[in-house]
Length: 209
Image (cartoon, rainbow, N blue to C red; front, side, top):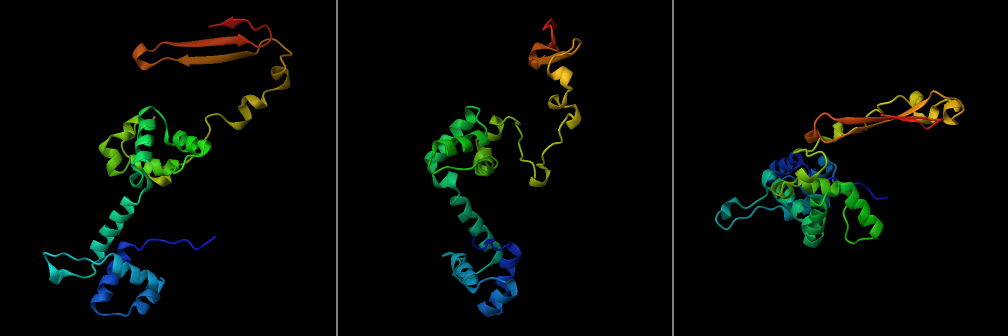
């Protein structure tokens, strides 16, 4: 596996701007930032600010470089790079599919190009997705995505020792009377507070509701 590459931060770009003004050598910039010298050369070339209306302002500026890099990454996003793929994903979302279902279906069908659920979520909560209110079609209807640190798996509602898999053998094999199975059905709120509870005796299969 190759080394993991991280994008230059706004802090690093501002340092490069200051060093550039005082003519610090690129090799010295790379040493201090612990970056490859080719990364610095590429940064200075790709994010060089130039405006015909202000020729005297041509140069490298950290804030402008950050904006240009962000805009370039946005244009290279897969759902923006492939309009037909984006259109197909949006249609699935509006038809009630979740990002997990869309991503897994593409894997199952061997679709190329395809996107993963994380890419779809990022698009939904991007400026483009927010413009079409794609968040409304998600099951949670959440306007803003939860921060990554809060997306933790919830603790189970029932303790491990009271799960149905650990019920006594007499109950599991229906050896004695008096044990019931219960099921609760809740209806939509517009139908009121009505619900139905059904009880079935495990041995005789007699029912009560």
